[in-house]
Picture 1 (cartoon, rainbow, N blue to C red):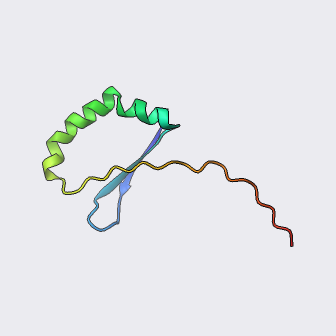
Picture 2 (picture 1 turned 180 degrees about the vertical axis):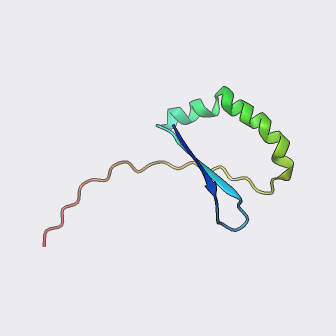
Length: 71
């Protein structure tokens, strides 16, 4: 797993975090982990100060087939 956090320059967003996981099974393991449970408990402290929270899941495209262009 890789994790990235950075300042976000979209209107009204302070920061963004990105987690790169191996596959769908790894997503389910991560969500059900003790670490995620502790994070959810920690969220309760600062959640009253949050106006919007977005969780988005993206799937990788994987390698694209080779394209040969003949001129």
